[in-house]
Length: 399
Image 1 (cartoon, rainbow, N blue to C red):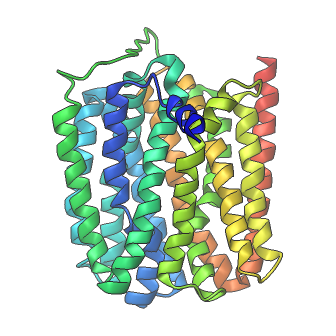
Image 2 (cartoon, rainbow, N blue to C red):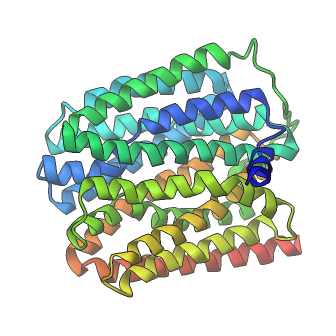
């Protein structure tokens, strides 16, 4: 057991102090984002909005994320990642607290849009900071460490969030979200100031290529958009499926979603280190992760047994555990050809656009056809995603 523990600890060696600080800031920030997994439940149960209304609000959520990702990338190339990250964390803290006081359809749409616009300016800036603070040979593991922080935060967040809802109310979640964002911003101000932080990989591009002209990268982004549309169902329609079809409580839903983060925390870093040294390409690993994610939705229709929910969650967890670190690394590699902020903004925007399409379309399909047809449609989306990645793999093998 001691040998196994030491091997696990060794997978974290060699990462810079700045990357560790960035991971801690991300952990504090994401542990507080417990509102997001419960947002659809909050809107339906506390504010009595219809599924159709919730779908449109979640689209505003995605639209804000798209604008924020683009703006964050633009500002990162112009004023630097540090200023963008500090502003995003502190300002989104105030906005999280303010959103709870909105109660009309239009005001919530506008509030959620503004909140996500400010909050998601952080993403492209964080990716560029991660690339700067990490040695080239450690970038996949650095990305994985950040993901571990995110998922550890998400594993604690939903479980704690379910407990807060049960004992207090949904309003308490917004206060915790806002305060944790502000705390993360204060820590960032103190430990990652560019005057004291050590940059490990300062990439200078003489004649930067526009990300919009990189055809292979655009195909990759299309695949990631499709992947994200499916993946995001686990944060909007799937919790409703747990509640309405399987009659799980908010606390049980929180625990089931926490299983995702906990599994990733334990297994992802060792798995990534092993896969990094394997003969498989980044694209090959992304394809494998996509196959597992497709299966995670298919199994939901195979039985009414509550155990399929755990099987589906584990399949999705392993799928994202493989697909996301290597897709992040693929994007960081391509970003060396041009403006890093622009490349990473587009990568973040693919996920943000999925918020616009994924949540709303999922809600609308459920309201018309029910959950079973919805899971078949999502599985089909993942099949198209896999086919797109195979086309990209073929193109890149030629070039």
